[in-house]
Image (cartoon, one colour):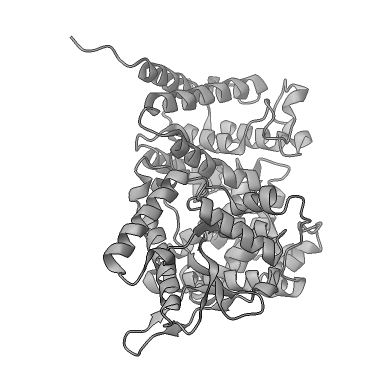
Length: 521
């Protein structure tokens, strides 16, 4: 006789069946329109949304994602992917995609399913590990996708040098075309869920052939999206943590000649032409990865020196005898009025995979090994400063930072502890010159978090926040450490690069600035 099933598993499977059965009754295109309307309803575009939804209670019109009536962007993204990967019932048009009650009931089922899925495995998943997954799912949506720092950052990294040449040679367009086209599409989808791809964009300088080449990078037919979603989401992971096909293709084409474009979540167009530019250059090989990794280092140097010039950020240099010379960490900051190094920064442009963000064995992903080796690089530099090899001394209170392009280790205390333990092992096995006094605190900081911190920090408060974040290894965001404990209530400064710098890198931004209010204000 078989043992009784775990009630958590039975509950999970029951919610999975209910969720799947409901989605099987939905028409894909009508469902995508419904998602656009819910997103519009709760992002300040209720007038447009109410053309596609009825029986909407007044309390559902909110832009506060913490409100009990809010439907969060990450939930809508899950629904879009699930409806595309779910088989259809022969009577699939029975789901009423225009009635608010339909989406409200479906969201409740999704939330119960997600709770049941965690309940079925919580004995094997520490709550702090789950918090890391939740953070990776939600942070991007909470901070938003369309702002000048993100466009500038990713254009600087991927839109210049070898990456730009590869992009132009491979796709027949410039990355600047992607940026300008993204604005045109975001404007088009601000008040309508479906857009005719043949729309004339000559007013903003986009020729029809350029338009189609850009759309080829952003768009896939609905049938192809269903096949892709079915493939990538069939790995058995929990519903919330499966790959999203909308990150690669935020636009879905349908209808006669595939003329009609759906953008269920227009914000993801901006995500695709900023951090998502990675998809366009990833196949360029090792030299291209080295190129955009170097550009990330230079971007971080430029940003730090522009936001807080008193830090006097220095680029790396080589030291040591010929034949056995080494590079310092990527960026170094001397103490005020001196030459001794007080902050050393190692930059990592490593992209987070889905397994690194959400996998049960995330710590085994290669990127975390990269983080551990970055820590060893910082400790080795501190040791060599102590030994007089680098040509610079190091202050008694010096600390290190691993600066990442993606959100590695944000709210990930167990993974941080694993990385530090791995670094300890690596340093003892392969770097005998590192002593305990050289194993200084290391803060793990994403570029987005660094920019937010610099918007309010002074040189002194910045160093104190980095030191606190590194010493505690709490998993807190650096900006939160600074805001809550180091400098509460500090006034915010603006973007550190002027209009001329922005226009030089992104000439299309000057054009749209004349057509809309400047998003920086």
